[in-house]
Amino acid sequence: SKFVNDKWMIKNGFLNDVQEHKPWWWNIKVQKLNLSAPLILLPEVSCQKAIDILQEKGYDQAPVVAESGLILGMVTLSNTLSSVLAGNAEFSDPVTKVTYDQFSKIGLEDSLGKLSCILENDHFAIVVHEQMQCSGNGSSFMKQMVFGVVTAMDLLTFVSRNDKK
Image (cartoon, rainbow, N blue to C red):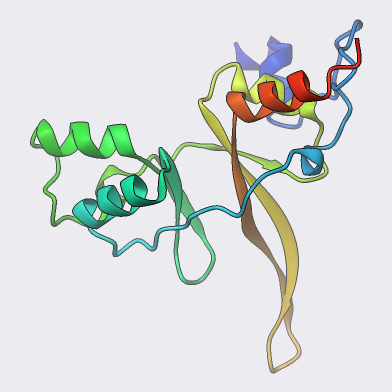
């Protein structure tokens, strides 16, 4: 059961880190990773256009975000190509047809230790930042903005470049 799995509990924010012998980087914040601004696709982008954009820009994946800012999921080059080749999607279909809607989010203030736990099971995490947005009538709400996409390679690169041993 998930609730007795410490890694699941840490990943989902129900438990703070319980690891006794932490590596030097464990408590460093995600914001210390040198992440570049992500490429974001809007939901109406076609599968063909998504493939073209990802290949042209040299990305393997990109978040799909509605104009409202709602994060709809993640599209990957391999999943898009395999879905089209298998006949489960057409090149003309919107990218939302091949979007992964189950993904992990992590905040800039979260630790690399928490990120490490997420990346043990997931290929990537979407780095989000909460921002207050105010409207003309004076109402305000918190909006999540995609700050970046982080992979195990990003974490490994940071650790190897900054190794304190």
